[in-house]
Image (cartoon, rainbow, N blue to C red):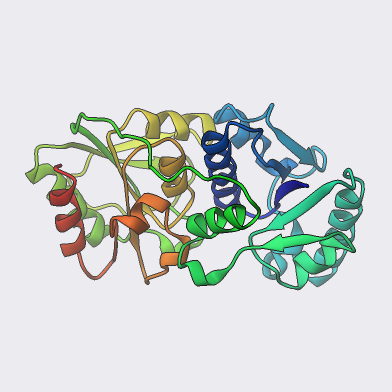
Length: 284
């Protein structure tokens, strides 16, 4: 059996899949499950040093999430042709690959074709734990202990942007978050990517980055703490073993980074108290 994680959707989904694969490899000393990803995530994979470990499908025209997973924006006709294309490309993969999808919806059932596939259980409460449970059920050992994090506590970044605008951290919440960190003598910057339209409070230090994954990954790596919107940077922080706290408009524990889920490292926009408790518990 050759379990193969198929991740064709957003960039955050890709990082979660790579985290899951890495935990299996770290635990049993065997080769990690193969990760098959769309060509649109290649630049992100390269920024993470993973491009040689991923099996990509697609071509240079794949600059964003396939239309099959972006029907509202791209339209039904584009989604139909995208589904056909995805099924064709997955059918071309070796027959000994048993696919693992993070969901078993109609899209996955169609593109999986007649091939045997597994999907994650929502009962685990969190997607990272769901991957662990699936691979354990397949007879794999899975790393149980989270890697140790950095011991310095001097540099924090807040990343308020998100692909979905309603998930962006609002200016009043940003001001509260930054104030809480300043009171703890933590040097804090708000990271904004080029072209992002973010409402920023007055008197806050802003670091503007070019819109490329290399710059974003470097900014996360150089930090001791990340406070992120419910978006890709939170999962990058998890992958890079940087402590992360998630600020979100509504509770969605299933999609939280592993460490944030296990340590209650998240809060809604309406309540900053969980951040204070989390900072205290983690000795910031």
